[in-house]
Length: 78
Image (tube, rainbow, N blue to C red; front, side):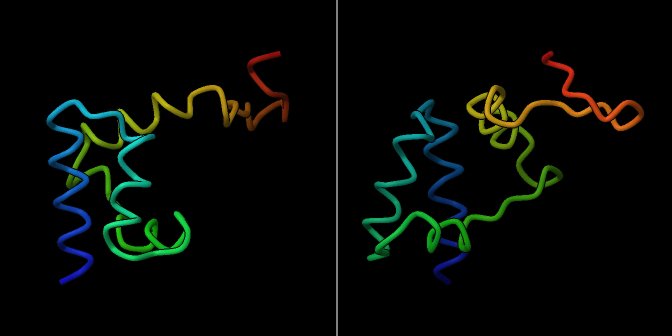
């Protein structure tokens, strides 16, 4: 039930346009977790179920994880 509540809550926050970067700590505190890592275990999403949420999350981390060209092994940001 906690997993379902967490996923649905995050989906609602995303659909209402709330900043997911700030929403996760709120959800984490509501669930009584001491870290975001604990909450992340509850809100694992699949692209097939919630493509709009994964797109928004990817937009937040676009510069965090560079694209790696597997053929050359070089970071495409270089």
